[in-house]
Image (cartoon, rainbow, N blue to C red; front, side, top):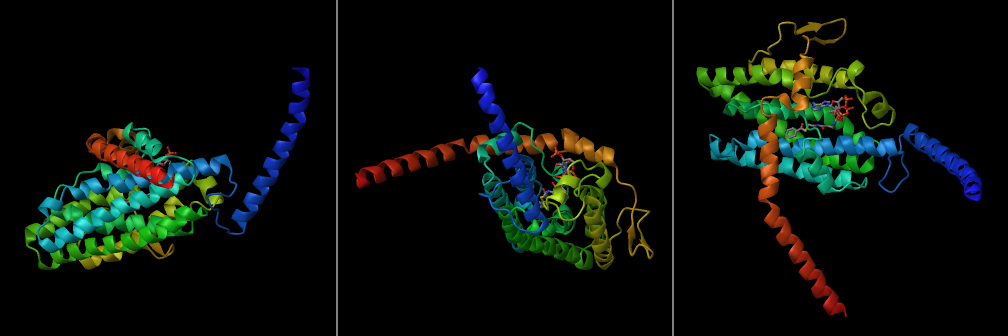
Length: 332
Ligand code: BYC
């Protein structure tokens, strides 16, 4: 016992000094704007923060397929159906890139999916609202994908390189998603009947505030922001991104001919930005904590899809085992 204690002490001190050296080198790389690769040393908290954010982001992509997926069989024309199919498939692809990026940090896809299916992991609040009409599909493209791009373009410069690389492709595709949504709404507003125009306005009224909530809590109530900004994971704060989104979207609403449902929305020449009304943060936290209109349905649909796919996973594993055995036999 005594001799062990004697030998552990100096080792501890040596490993603490080594940790401090590694930490200082890591901070210097971040300050210099270097990208961190999967095999580089990184502090545990940096790794955990990235796993949390990237896995939540991946979950948002695959849960995000559900509200729009509901409209594939009811799209009004073949053209709209083909576009929607492509968009929903893109979201599945985004989920795959992001799960792969998170796996480079040492977590497994099974662990991440288990956290989603058991309700431990979060996904974006926005997907817990229902898609009641065809106009919702256009508005999701315009506002939800528009907000997503605003939030995700800075992530292309995230300090963790595998995440940054995944985001470059995601953003290119999101840009197409936003445009197709806006174009679909323009068609409804310019060529549609009065009832169709009213349907667009109703969808805008329902999606506007939840879209503003996508950027997360205000900066002074965002527990993760300070450290994530310090580490270059987040480059622009929640509130700054929300403001940029409002400023970009108001002129688009004017062109469309819809009214954004906020009596306090007005141009502020001094700030060179739009002022906007108070966000209902109680609603946001209710939705984040599982009490939104569609939380239960979204989760049970995901769990059912996972269970229904069990036979495919088993068949793929059996095939892989058979192939490996064959290759081993041939090599022998
Ligand atoms: N919904 O300290 P904060 C898409 C959580 S995909 C739910 O500011 P952070 C799309 C937050 O996780 C959209 N939860 O956190 C897909 C944290 O809880 P934990 C998804 C939210 O991480 C398909 C707590 O609140 N995009 O657009 O610094 C089709 C405190 O927040 C939300 C991404 O995931 C929310 N809205 O900042 C169409 C982008 N907001 O984890 C479209 C990547 C906050 O401590 N993620 N929370 O328990 C991010 O940029 C950041 O994680 C966030 C939050 C800005 C979202």
